Image 1 (cartoon, rainbow, N blue to C red):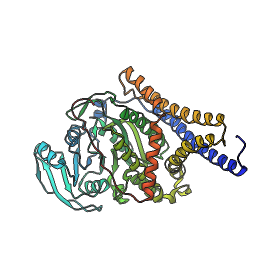
Image 2 (image 1 turned 180 degrees about the horizontal axis):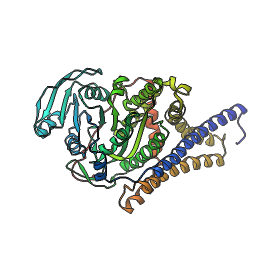
Image 3 (image 1 turned 135 degrees about the vertical axis):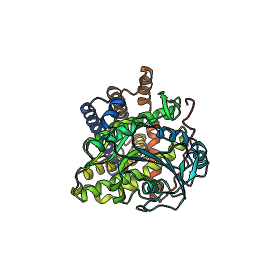
Image 4 (image 1 turned 180 degrees about the vertical axis):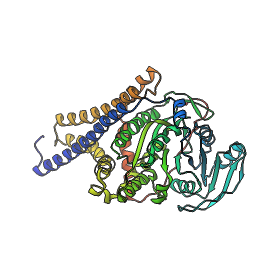
Amino acid sequence: MITGWSPEIIFIATIVSWAVIGSGMAQTTVYLLQLVIAGYALSKRPPVARSALLWRRYGDVAPPIALIVPAYNEAMNVVESVHSMLALEYPNFEVIVVNDGSKDATLQCLVEAFKLVQSQRPYEEALPHNPIRGLYSSLVAERLFVIDKENGGKADAQNAGINVCRAPIFCVIDGDSILEPDALMRAAQPFIDDPERTIAVGGTIRIANGSRIESGRVKEIHLPKKLLPLFQVIEYLRAFLMARLAWSRVNTLMLVSGAFGVFRRAEVVAVGGFTKGSMGEDLDLVIKLHRYMIDRGRKYRIEFIPEPVCWTEAPESLKVLARQRSRWQRGALESFFRYRSMLFNPRYGRVAFLGFGHMLIVDVLGPIMEVLGYILIPAFWLLGILSLDYLLAFTALVFTYGVCVSVCSLILEEAELQRFPRARDLAVLTVVAVLENFGYRQLNNIWRLKGYWQYLRADQSWGEMTRTGLSGAKK
């Protein structure tokens, strides 16, 4: 500390500085813990079985599954995505696309590509949703069924699909996503191995920008050519491989991504389905499932397995990415405060202390404390309240742990899963894992802070997610 200021000012600066450092150290501890648990979990997993072996082992006992695909203004990608789903290597499934009142040509594209005709199907109104305008079946793809309904949001569309589906297990997937051929069989494996306890399974989401896609399949894996999607490749490695695998290991997984998640229908209906109007409907549903099963004293598993891969298009502009990250932050805050009674409640065990504790540190306090640190620590130094040594130590701490976590996640991915076939790709990603801590990470926290403000103002706007399309040439 540098003297010259009143003791009160120095005391306040000291408290703020240590609060910022304490929050940062708490996040660091969480991330390092996740890294260790994820590494242990991967080391204990059996070798990844080949698709043909999975089919021989599980083909005869695989349960029926309905793929529910909510689509809003997805004309650019929806046909390619549906082709990908219809080509899945799974014995008994149907694809239900829910056109949620799209303003573009989503429905028309589906009608023309799959020769849809109006159809009838009896279904129960187990979950509430906006009115259905029409049901369609395909003359060329018997597994395909399309629901056209009034716009009600993603959760509302998913509830409509759950009502109409007939399978005991359903998979939700975004309309702009592409599944690997064996993804459904791999995701169904926990339901087959432990049918009594498994109620939800999540898989890995990967960035498709830059890869060559033909006929609904990823033919060649390439890194994105643009820097912004490259940053997101590293983010997704941390989020899916490290964080979700770690929490799954201790049965405290709080999020099964709405881009690709498999659920047992009975339990989802029992908790009221997806919460309509929620900004984080996938997070909200998983928390409801935890609460429901614990309240009834039932043993259960919510798992993440890294092998089933779903490819999705990442935003390539700052404007679109900012809207997405602000919305994600609103969803996290909304779910945290909606179920805040579970926080540190002994009744809910690990979910209360580890799951909600993680949300408190990373989602509730994290963005505020990090942005405060960016602003106040340099300001205190400029005002002479903090010494240069303190400023340099703080800066080194922030960037060193960020680089460490990103690079270690990449090393873990390559050591265990080996998804990047070229050494050049690994070199590029290593450089990106370092660079993202110098500007991109700070931008992300500012976007999250904007999401915080929108949550406090009860802003429920979704924002347009502009797509460039996954099919065809590399991007």
